[in-house]
Amino acid sequence: MLYIISLWRDVWSPLNVFQYITFRTGGAFLTALLIMLMFGESFIALVKKWEVTQSIREYGPQTHLKKSGTPTMGGLLILLALVVATGLWARMDNRFIVVTLISSIYLG
Image (tube, rainbow, N blue to C red; front, side):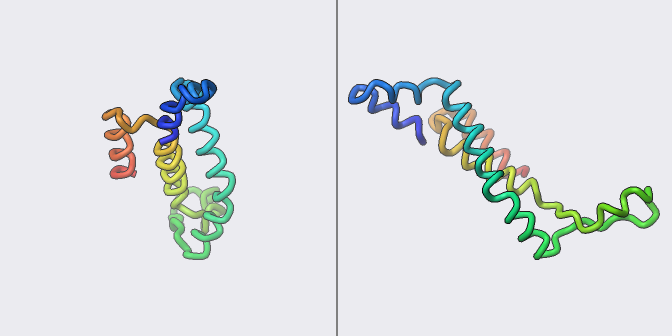
């Protein structure tokens, strides 16, 4: 979506930087990182409140028993960060981006 800003490069030439894939990759990385840092702790607290945890087998290794109560939906936050960062920084006219995004959402 931010790629569209580069269409205004005739008005202000520094906007041309949005055409470079390296700039957009760095921007997407920083966006995903900020989403994870801003919402990660509160998301984990919310998942713990909802008690979405994985049960630990009693007959398994004894060292695994201390993991009881660990939330199991952390991948959902990673997926959200991926979708938001890709939606903001990728060229959505590229069919490979769209297919990869849909596949990531569908397969989780």
